[in-house]
Length: 399
Figure: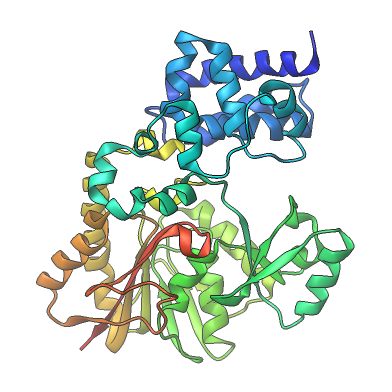
Protein backbone atom coordinates (compact mmCIF):
# COMPACT_ATOMS: atom_id res chain seq x y z
CA UNK A 1 0.00 0.00 0.00
CA UNK A 2 1.35 3.42 -0.96
CA UNK A 3 1.79 6.22 1.56
CA UNK A 4 -1.14 8.12 0.04
CA UNK A 5 -3.37 5.02 0.13
CA UNK A 6 -2.57 4.55 3.80
CA UNK A 7 -3.30 8.22 4.49
CA UNK A 8 -6.62 7.93 2.67
CA UNK A 9 -7.65 5.06 4.91
CA UNK A 10 -6.62 6.95 8.05
CA UNK A 11 -8.54 10.02 6.93
CA UNK A 12 -11.63 7.96 6.18
CA UNK A 13 -11.41 6.36 9.62
CA UNK A 14 -11.11 9.77 11.27
CA UNK A 15 -14.08 11.37 9.53
CA UNK A 16 -16.28 8.32 10.10
CA UNK A 17 -15.50 8.62 13.83
CA UNK A 18 -16.33 12.34 13.78
CA UNK A 19 -19.46 11.98 11.67
CA UNK A 20 -21.92 11.42 14.56
CA UNK A 21 -20.81 14.72 16.08
CA UNK A 22 -20.64 17.21 13.26
CA UNK A 23 -24.35 18.07 13.12
CA UNK A 24 -24.73 18.59 16.85
CA UNK A 25 -21.46 19.28 18.69
CA UNK A 26 -20.48 22.97 18.82
CA UNK A 27 -17.30 21.91 20.62
CA UNK A 28 -16.22 19.77 17.67
CA UNK A 29 -12.77 21.43 17.25
CA UNK A 30 -11.78 20.23 20.73
CA UNK A 31 -12.86 16.70 19.80
CA UNK A 32 -10.87 16.89 16.56
CA UNK A 33 -7.81 18.04 18.48
CA UNK A 34 -8.13 15.20 20.97
CA UNK A 35 -8.52 12.63 18.19
CA UNK A 36 -5.42 13.88 16.38
CA UNK A 37 -3.37 14.21 19.57
CA UNK A 38 -3.96 10.68 20.75
CA UNK A 39 -2.75 9.12 17.49
CA UNK A 40 0.79 8.37 18.57
CA UNK A 41 1.90 7.38 15.10
CA UNK A 42 1.19 10.91 13.80
CA UNK A 43 3.91 13.46 13.39
CA UNK A 44 3.21 17.19 13.20
CA UNK A 45 2.92 17.07 9.40
CA UNK A 46 0.40 14.22 9.63
CA UNK A 47 -1.72 16.22 12.03
CA UNK A 48 -1.64 19.26 9.77
CA UNK A 49 -2.63 17.13 6.78
CA UNK A 50 -5.57 15.47 8.49
CA UNK A 51 -6.70 18.70 10.13
CA UNK A 52 -6.84 20.38 6.72
CA UNK A 53 -8.77 17.47 5.23
CA UNK A 54 -11.22 17.32 8.15
CA UNK A 55 -11.92 21.06 8.05
CA UNK A 56 -12.31 20.92 4.28
CA UNK A 57 -14.89 18.19 4.76
CA UNK A 58 -16.78 20.42 7.20
CA UNK A 59 -16.63 23.41 4.86
CA UNK A 60 -18.00 21.40 1.94
CA UNK A 61 -20.09 18.91 3.93
CA UNK A 62 -23.10 18.72 1.55
CA UNK A 63 -20.70 17.94 -1.32
CA UNK A 64 -18.87 15.19 0.59
CA UNK A 65 -21.06 13.60 3.26
CA UNK A 66 -23.52 11.81 0.90
CA UNK A 67 -20.59 10.03 -0.73
CA UNK A 68 -19.44 8.52 2.55
CA UNK A 69 -22.27 6.00 2.19
CA UNK A 70 -22.49 5.90 -1.60
CA UNK A 71 -18.80 5.70 -2.48
CA UNK A 72 -16.29 6.40 0.33
CA UNK A 73 -13.35 6.53 -2.08
CA UNK A 74 -15.10 9.30 -4.01
CA UNK A 75 -15.73 11.19 -0.76
CA UNK A 76 -12.01 10.98 0.04
CA UNK A 77 -11.11 12.22 -3.45
CA UNK A 78 -13.53 15.13 -3.24
CA UNK A 79 -12.12 16.22 0.11
CA UNK A 80 -8.57 16.09 -1.25
CA UNK A 81 -9.51 18.07 -4.36
CA UNK A 82 -11.31 20.77 -2.39
CA UNK A 83 -8.54 21.09 0.22
CA UNK A 84 -6.03 23.92 0.07
CA UNK A 85 -2.68 23.04 -1.42
CA UNK A 86 -0.01 23.46 1.24
CA UNK A 87 3.37 21.87 1.80
CA UNK A 88 1.60 19.30 3.99
CA UNK A 89 -1.17 18.43 1.51
CA UNK A 90 0.66 18.73 -1.82
CA UNK A 91 1.94 15.15 -2.21
CA UNK A 92 -1.31 13.68 -0.89
CA UNK A 93 -3.38 15.72 -3.33
CA UNK A 94 -1.21 14.74 -6.28
CA UNK A 95 -1.69 11.05 -5.49
CA UNK A 96 -5.37 11.30 -4.54
CA UNK A 97 -6.86 13.74 -7.06
CA UNK A 98 -4.05 14.65 -9.45
CA UNK A 99 -6.15 13.57 -12.42
CA UNK A 100 -8.80 16.19 -11.65
CA UNK A 101 -8.35 19.76 -12.95
CA UNK A 102 -7.40 22.69 -10.76
CA UNK A 103 -10.28 25.15 -11.07
CA UNK A 104 -10.07 28.81 -10.03
CA UNK A 105 -13.56 29.54 -8.75
CA UNK A 106 -16.25 28.04 -6.58
CA UNK A 107 -18.68 28.17 -9.52
CA UNK A 108 -16.29 26.14 -11.67
CA UNK A 109 -15.75 23.59 -8.90
CA UNK A 110 -19.50 23.27 -8.39
CA UNK A 111 -20.04 22.72 -12.10
CA UNK A 112 -17.31 20.06 -12.26
CA UNK A 113 -18.86 18.17 -9.34
CA UNK A 114 -22.40 18.77 -10.63
CA UNK A 115 -23.17 20.33 -7.26
CA UNK A 116 -24.97 23.46 -6.07
CA UNK A 117 -22.85 26.08 -4.31
CA UNK A 118 -25.93 27.36 -2.47
CA UNK A 119 -26.03 24.09 -0.53
CA UNK A 120 -22.80 25.10 1.23
CA UNK A 121 -24.76 27.51 3.45
CA UNK A 122 -27.77 26.44 5.54
CA UNK A 123 -31.05 27.46 3.95
CA UNK A 124 -32.22 29.40 7.02
CA UNK A 125 -29.00 31.46 6.93
CA UNK A 126 -29.33 32.31 3.24
CA UNK A 127 -32.71 33.82 4.09
CA UNK A 128 -31.21 35.76 7.04
CA UNK A 129 -28.20 37.11 5.16
CA UNK A 130 -28.64 37.05 1.36
CA UNK A 131 -25.40 39.01 0.90
CA UNK A 132 -23.40 36.04 2.21
CA UNK A 133 -24.72 33.88 -0.62
CA UNK A 134 -23.31 36.03 -3.41
CA UNK A 135 -20.46 34.29 -5.29
CA UNK A 136 -17.74 36.58 -3.91
CA UNK A 137 -18.85 36.34 -0.28
CA UNK A 138 -19.55 32.62 -0.45
CA UNK A 139 -16.07 32.04 -1.85
CA UNK A 140 -14.62 34.00 1.08
CA UNK A 141 -16.70 32.12 3.66
CA UNK A 142 -15.38 28.81 2.28
CA UNK A 143 -11.72 29.84 2.16
CA UNK A 144 -9.15 29.04 4.81
CA UNK A 145 -8.87 31.96 7.20
CA UNK A 146 -5.61 33.87 6.74
CA UNK A 147 -3.27 34.67 9.60
CA UNK A 148 -3.60 38.31 10.65
CA UNK A 149 -1.41 40.05 13.22
CA UNK A 150 -1.82 43.30 15.10
CA UNK A 151 1.40 45.20 15.71
CA UNK A 152 1.82 46.42 19.28
CA UNK A 153 5.13 48.19 18.77
CA UNK A 154 6.72 51.11 17.00
CA UNK A 155 9.55 48.75 16.03
CA UNK A 156 7.92 47.47 12.86
CA UNK A 157 11.32 47.09 11.22
CA UNK A 158 12.50 44.74 13.95
CA UNK A 159 9.47 42.49 13.52
CA UNK A 160 9.91 42.56 9.74
CA UNK A 161 13.59 41.57 10.05
CA UNK A 162 12.82 38.60 12.28
CA UNK A 163 10.12 37.38 9.91
CA UNK A 164 12.37 37.88 6.86
CA UNK A 165 15.12 35.87 8.57
CA UNK A 166 12.63 33.00 8.88
CA UNK A 167 11.60 33.32 5.23
CA UNK A 168 8.12 34.60 6.08
CA UNK A 169 6.43 37.20 3.93
CA UNK A 170 3.99 39.76 5.33
CA UNK A 171 1.66 42.35 3.85
CA UNK A 172 0.13 45.34 5.66
CA UNK A 173 -3.63 45.67 5.32
CA UNK A 174 -4.61 48.65 3.14
CA UNK A 175 -7.57 49.26 5.45
CA UNK A 176 -5.40 49.27 8.60
CA UNK A 177 -1.61 49.39 8.12
CA UNK A 178 -0.91 48.24 11.70
CA UNK A 179 -2.48 44.89 10.75
CA UNK A 180 -0.20 42.49 8.90
CA UNK A 181 -1.19 39.43 6.94
CA UNK A 182 1.31 36.57 7.09
CA UNK A 183 1.52 35.05 3.62
CA UNK A 184 3.34 31.85 4.56
CA UNK A 185 2.62 28.97 6.92
CA UNK A 186 4.15 30.27 10.13
CA UNK A 187 4.00 29.63 13.84
CA UNK A 188 4.41 33.21 15.03
CA UNK A 189 4.09 32.15 18.69
CA UNK A 190 7.68 30.88 18.46
CA UNK A 191 9.10 34.30 17.61
CA UNK A 192 10.81 36.84 19.82
CA UNK A 193 8.30 39.41 18.57
CA UNK A 194 5.47 37.36 20.07
CA UNK A 195 7.33 36.57 23.29
CA UNK A 196 8.06 40.28 23.76
CA UNK A 197 4.44 41.28 23.13
CA UNK A 198 5.22 43.22 19.97
CA UNK A 199 2.61 41.28 17.99
CA UNK A 200 -0.72 39.63 18.74
CA UNK A 201 -2.72 37.25 16.57
CA UNK A 202 -6.04 38.99 15.80
CA UNK A 203 -8.24 38.78 12.73
CA UNK A 204 -8.29 41.99 10.71
CA UNK A 205 -12.08 42.18 10.95
CA UNK A 206 -11.83 42.07 14.72
CA UNK A 207 -9.34 44.92 14.58
CA UNK A 208 -11.64 46.97 12.33
CA UNK A 209 -14.45 46.76 14.90
CA UNK A 210 -12.69 49.13 17.29
CA UNK A 211 -11.11 51.13 14.48
CA UNK A 212 -14.65 52.10 13.43
CA UNK A 213 -15.37 54.04 16.62
CA UNK A 214 -13.88 57.09 18.33
CA UNK A 215 -11.58 56.17 21.23
CA UNK A 216 -9.51 58.92 22.79
CA UNK A 217 -6.24 58.91 24.71
CA UNK A 218 -6.85 59.15 28.42
CA UNK A 219 -10.35 57.61 28.27
CA UNK A 220 -11.59 55.00 30.73
CA UNK A 221 -13.25 52.07 28.95
CA UNK A 222 -15.00 48.90 30.05
CA UNK A 223 -14.62 45.74 27.99
CA UNK A 224 -17.72 44.03 29.34
CA UNK A 225 -17.29 40.64 27.64
CA UNK A 226 -13.51 40.64 27.49
CA UNK A 227 -12.79 36.94 27.08
CA UNK A 228 -9.09 36.35 26.53
CA UNK A 229 -8.58 40.02 25.77
CA UNK A 230 -7.84 40.57 22.09
CA UNK A 231 -9.93 43.72 21.96
CA UNK A 232 -8.96 44.64 25.54
CA UNK A 233 -5.34 44.93 24.43
CA UNK A 234 -6.38 46.93 21.39
CA UNK A 235 -8.41 49.27 23.61
CA UNK A 236 -5.50 49.69 26.01
CA UNK A 237 -3.29 50.78 23.14
CA UNK A 238 -5.87 53.29 21.93
CA UNK A 239 -6.47 54.93 25.34
CA UNK A 240 -2.71 55.03 26.02
CA UNK A 241 -0.80 55.19 29.30
CA UNK A 242 -3.02 57.94 30.66
CA UNK A 243 -6.16 55.89 30.04
CA UNK A 244 -7.54 52.77 31.66
CA UNK A 245 -9.35 49.66 30.44
CA UNK A 246 -11.34 47.59 32.90
CA UNK A 247 -12.02 44.04 31.73
CA UNK A 248 -14.98 41.97 32.84
CA UNK A 249 -16.02 38.42 31.98
CA UNK A 250 -17.82 35.54 33.67
CA UNK A 251 -15.03 33.10 32.69
CA UNK A 252 -12.07 33.28 35.09
CA UNK A 253 -9.84 31.16 32.84
CA UNK A 254 -10.27 33.62 29.97
CA UNK A 255 -9.36 36.55 32.23
CA UNK A 256 -6.27 34.66 33.42
CA UNK A 257 -5.15 34.40 29.80
CA UNK A 258 -5.89 38.09 29.31
CA UNK A 259 -3.55 38.99 32.18
CA UNK A 260 -0.79 36.83 30.68
CA UNK A 261 -1.17 38.61 27.36
CA UNK A 262 -1.25 42.02 29.02
CA UNK A 263 1.95 41.25 30.95
CA UNK A 264 3.63 40.01 27.80
CA UNK A 265 2.71 43.26 26.04
CA UNK A 266 3.84 45.36 29.00
CA UNK A 267 0.40 46.92 29.46
CA UNK A 268 -0.17 48.32 32.93
CA UNK A 269 -3.37 50.20 32.06
CA UNK A 270 -5.60 47.09 32.20
CA UNK A 271 -7.53 46.08 35.30
CA UNK A 272 -9.93 43.21 36.00
CA UNK A 273 -13.28 44.22 37.47
CA UNK A 274 -16.07 42.07 38.84
CA UNK A 275 -18.42 44.99 39.52
CA UNK A 276 -18.42 47.62 36.76
CA UNK A 277 -19.66 50.92 38.13
CA UNK A 278 -22.60 52.92 36.79
CA UNK A 279 -21.81 56.09 34.84
CA UNK A 280 -18.06 55.58 35.12
CA UNK A 281 -16.86 54.95 31.57
CA UNK A 282 -16.31 57.08 28.48
CA UNK A 283 -16.92 53.92 26.50
CA UNK A 284 -18.30 50.44 27.07
CA UNK A 285 -17.64 47.63 24.61
CA UNK A 286 -20.17 44.79 24.58
CA UNK A 287 -18.53 42.27 22.26
CA UNK A 288 -21.36 39.85 22.82
CA UNK A 289 -21.37 36.06 22.59
CA UNK A 290 -23.13 35.12 19.36
CA UNK A 291 -23.90 32.30 16.95
CA UNK A 292 -20.60 32.92 15.17
CA UNK A 293 -21.75 32.90 11.54
CA UNK A 294 -19.06 35.44 10.67
CA UNK A 295 -16.41 32.93 11.73
CA UNK A 296 -17.58 30.01 9.59
CA UNK A 297 -14.41 30.15 7.49
CA UNK A 298 -12.35 29.14 10.53
CA UNK A 299 -15.12 27.27 12.42
CA UNK A 300 -17.04 25.55 9.60
CA UNK A 301 -18.68 23.07 11.98
CA UNK A 302 -20.84 25.94 13.26
CA UNK A 303 -22.68 26.00 9.92
CA UNK A 304 -24.16 22.61 10.68
CA UNK A 305 -24.74 23.00 14.44
CA UNK A 306 -26.37 26.46 14.38
CA UNK A 307 -30.15 26.75 13.98
CA UNK A 308 -32.69 29.58 14.06
CA UNK A 309 -33.31 28.62 17.69
CA UNK A 310 -29.60 29.12 18.41
CA UNK A 311 -29.76 32.59 16.88
CA UNK A 312 -32.92 33.49 18.83
CA UNK A 313 -31.36 32.41 22.14
CA UNK A 314 -28.23 34.45 21.47
CA UNK A 315 -30.35 37.48 20.57
CA UNK A 316 -32.10 37.27 23.94
CA UNK A 317 -28.75 37.09 25.74
CA UNK A 318 -27.31 39.96 23.72
CA UNK A 319 -30.23 42.24 24.52
CA UNK A 320 -29.85 41.40 28.20
CA UNK A 321 -26.13 42.22 28.10
CA UNK A 322 -26.75 45.60 26.46
CA UNK A 323 -29.39 46.44 29.05
CA UNK A 324 -27.08 45.35 31.87
CA UNK A 325 -24.04 47.37 30.83
CA UNK A 326 -25.69 50.47 29.31
CA UNK A 327 -25.92 52.22 32.71
CA UNK A 328 -22.12 52.03 32.98
CA UNK A 329 -21.74 54.58 30.16
CA UNK A 330 -21.29 58.15 31.35
CA UNK A 331 -23.44 60.90 29.76
CA UNK A 332 -21.96 61.73 26.38
CA UNK A 333 -20.10 58.43 26.32
CA UNK A 334 -20.35 55.56 23.85
CA UNK A 335 -21.82 52.08 24.03
CA UNK A 336 -20.24 49.88 21.34
CA UNK A 337 -22.09 46.71 20.42
CA UNK A 338 -20.28 44.07 18.37
CA UNK A 339 -20.81 40.48 17.26
CA UNK A 340 -19.05 38.05 14.95
CA UNK A 341 -22.46 37.16 13.49
CA UNK A 342 -23.88 38.05 10.09
CA UNK A 343 -27.46 37.36 11.23
CA UNK A 344 -29.59 40.53 11.36
CA UNK A 345 -31.64 39.04 14.19
CA UNK A 346 -28.51 39.26 16.38
CA UNK A 347 -27.43 42.63 15.06
CA UNK A 348 -29.92 45.20 13.80
CA UNK A 349 -32.77 43.29 15.44
CA UNK A 350 -31.17 43.40 18.88
CA UNK A 351 -30.31 47.08 18.52
CA UNK A 352 -33.85 47.98 17.46
CA UNK A 353 -35.26 46.37 20.60
CA UNK A 354 -32.61 47.98 22.81
CA UNK A 355 -33.18 51.47 21.40
CA UNK A 356 -36.93 51.12 21.78
CA UNK A 357 -36.43 50.46 25.50
CA UNK A 358 -33.57 52.95 26.03
CA UNK A 359 -34.40 56.31 24.44
CA UNK A 360 -31.38 57.83 26.16
CA UNK A 361 -29.12 56.22 23.53
CA UNK A 362 -28.84 57.10 19.84
CA UNK A 363 -26.81 55.54 16.98
CA UNK A 364 -23.65 57.30 15.83
CA UNK A 365 -22.06 56.80 12.39
CA UNK A 366 -18.73 54.98 12.29
CA UNK A 367 -15.62 57.13 12.11
CA UNK A 368 -14.39 54.77 9.39
CA UNK A 369 -16.44 52.37 7.24
CA UNK A 370 -13.56 50.66 5.36
CA UNK A 371 -15.44 50.61 2.05
CA UNK A 372 -18.70 49.22 3.48
CA UNK A 373 -22.03 51.03 3.48
CA UNK A 374 -23.16 51.74 7.06
CA UNK A 375 -26.76 50.97 7.87
CA UNK A 376 -29.01 53.15 10.03
CA UNK A 377 -27.97 51.26 13.16
CA UNK A 378 -24.51 49.82 12.47
CA UNK A 379 -21.83 48.52 10.15
CA UNK A 380 -21.64 44.98 8.76
CA UNK A 381 -18.13 43.85 7.82
CA UNK A 382 -18.50 41.11 5.21
CA UNK A 383 -15.52 38.77 4.70
CA UNK A 384 -14.66 39.18 1.02
CA UNK A 385 -13.63 42.85 0.83
CA UNK A 386 -10.66 42.60 3.20
CA UNK A 387 -10.32 38.79 3.59
CA UNK A 388 -11.54 38.73 7.18
CA UNK A 389 -14.05 37.08 9.40
CA UNK A 390 -17.49 38.71 9.35
CA UNK A 391 -18.52 41.20 12.05
CA UNK A 392 -21.19 43.69 12.99
CA UNK A 393 -20.47 46.82 15.03
CA UNK A 394 -22.62 49.72 16.15
CA UNK A 395 -21.78 52.76 18.29
CA UNK A 396 -24.49 54.33 20.43
CA UNK A 397 -24.08 57.65 22.25
CA UNK A 398 -25.63 58.22 25.64
CA UNK A 399 -27.37 61.57 25.80
